[in-house]
Length: 476
Image (cartoon, rainbow, N blue to C red; front, side):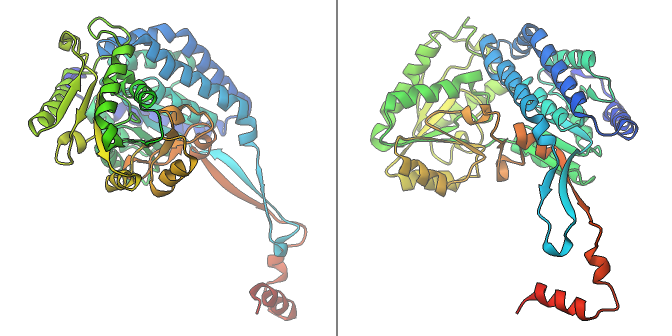
């Protein structure tokens, strides 16, 4: 959808600013929500997601041109409901004050941590998983007792409108609200004085968001991307790896921030692996045109970008393996494609692909594969295929990434009790489950002095007791 679909506004951030003011006023009026209030909010959200399930699948498919209903259920609805159930089950324990140790000099005082909500959380969500990456952060924020302003992507306008409608049925605007608009609105949104800002999107845009938030010293969680590598080790069955990687790569037509972006394969097996991936793609998607299981590329611009990546690689000497299907360009169904002979000079190896294209790079030994990974920016995800524990441990010890799945792809993101986030250029901060609760809470330190106060007894005039105590504390 073109960004000029939204009418021009003198101040694109005016509505968001008004809502932010109202939510801050509600915090001052109502204070910290109780455990029961948080459960009620999560229950209402969970019930509405179930009720709107089919409508969301239709809206997302319409926004994409064609989006697999099964993929929406699997990657968005089920993931969301599982995450909410996890929060509900553990929330009481997360909210309990945590006792902390007190040094002997301050006894019988007591120390504890109270996890309190940060306030108003701003969420800027992307188009590729417009439901999970909007409502997942919302659930974490509600569990932590916050209020939320959500800015969904203008690339999925029907989904954004449905999100706004659904959330308005559950929450008052001073608790949860949706702000729609194009890039100008998103930029103005990021400049507002939120208590925390969570952004999911590209690394390039993430830099702009962080700069905008810095003016208000707004803390940020940035879920970005990068080129997530797969290392296929010699001991792992080739066809089994090819099938598993194809499933993860071609889900949502590769439009997944943690999709495998390139594969490192032993040099003498690279050609066989590449062909195996194409073969497995054919088993997963016997045809492209008219196949409701295979998702379309979000827009003509993104389709053309993917086409240019492949053709530029071909022109620069790469070998291209793809499906021998009738063209499905009119439906923006980009065929599963594998590139052999890709080099670092090619754009396909310089930018996140975000589509169903997989470069396969040969390596001679594991050291070379690890060096290739470490030569690039730290990725959001890393995948290692090996049944040798020592090999897996070596890869984990010598690389850095936001998360890891061993002998599969994508699945670390689906674990409710694991944090999800990047490192360096792939993001900052992590959320999901307990880590989301902590990320969106303030650990407030509380100390209660006993009947006897160490500070009172060590006050001036400084005498023998002071010298005795300080001597013990300093030591010899």
